Image 1 (cartoon, rainbow over the protein chains, first blue to last red):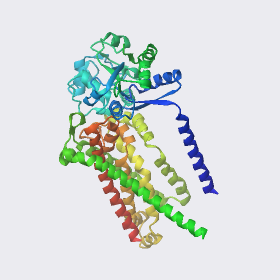
Image 2: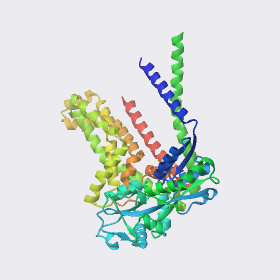
Image 3: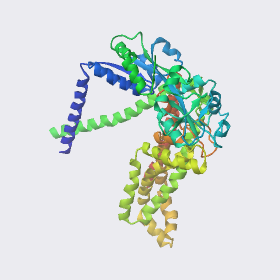
Image 4: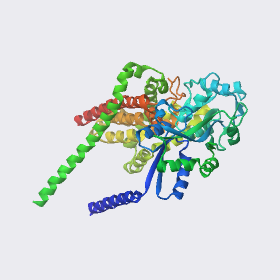
Length: 266
Length: 286
């Protein structure tokens, strides 16, 4: 009796899976993969795009900038999303469309007295030359440096813009914007950097060279830690892919980007 | 006739299924070795294993700090886990009445069912701030990981130890009592030596779990690539190294992570093999 039920269950599961597959049929689909910083925005844009174009299915995947470049090259995705200041040499074979900008913001714990740092101070802290908050205008506490893993788009953009960083070995490494934010929120002596769209009230953003990381300052070009977000395609975008990229670059698309905390390309 | 036929076909089906499990293992091993081994030879075994420079973007691939990290964290979890598990096992098998055991043992085994990400979460939210406030350092440290992993491996070591203590024939205990031994003398001179290989097998299985654990470890160790000077230092383990960087790695960097996997695989295989021998010796004795 028991085996009969199990058999029925398997049949039911099997047909459910088949049904799911059948539903996807009849719609054209495009896939975008890559940058986890842009992923939530891409998902929102895809939802709006699909509402306007019900016959096209847009699938958004994460994986990171390197995965974005890789899957655009291999054809695993129609669009690769990358958030790097300098695209790696292998991305030269791809056509890039500049769709948005993202500020990288230095964050500390709200208990920290320091309000801002200079670029040189940030460099010294990440290189391990300055190890105590009192040397940069804070209390007498050791600095816990929080960085990202090697290969992260946020980290490579950060290191490219700040320049001459050889991350100190004691630095704590976290594997996403979210966990960096969580670590800094939990540690009164920590400093980290995250995407501008992810600031919340558990951490405090720092001004750099006296300029706060706000949409206005980034648009004026005064805030320095800014990286571009590229959509990469093999060859110039055509058909549905072009429609989607054009939608992101349209006023509606750019407004969505702005409303959710990123900075529009134009 | 019909019955015989179905009997045979079930036997065949089971054989195929059993072998497909082995095939899956073989596939994984072959895949990791094919991806990782060429890299190890390209970089050079000694550079890969004994260099402390891990900067994959700059072409420097030394996993020595990660090997040390894995070993130190595992050792730490043993120091936390073994005394707890062993004393628990002795207490539960020798001192507690059967009915209480029926409640306590399943409860402890429930610990094994808690997902590792939950352990990691507790480590980050509770343990790390405590360590930071009272002992200093970044909090995310070897100490935090050792305590979390020690609790995670507790059920494994405990339940295998209880089983092997229970398997010691009652006549050993009666013999010891008859010679005038106290309860404690009986346990540590007669029962524990008889159950030794089973307990060791349990410890090695726990060791395997500790060294292979990834999620909780990523969350509580802080993942700094460094040779630690004290238990308050942050370290990165081999498993964390793979999981942290896999998402972003391409080219040589990606291969280097597979190579890290090869080293991890070798370490775990040696451990498992040791466990198998220890268990076999126990069975052989009976």
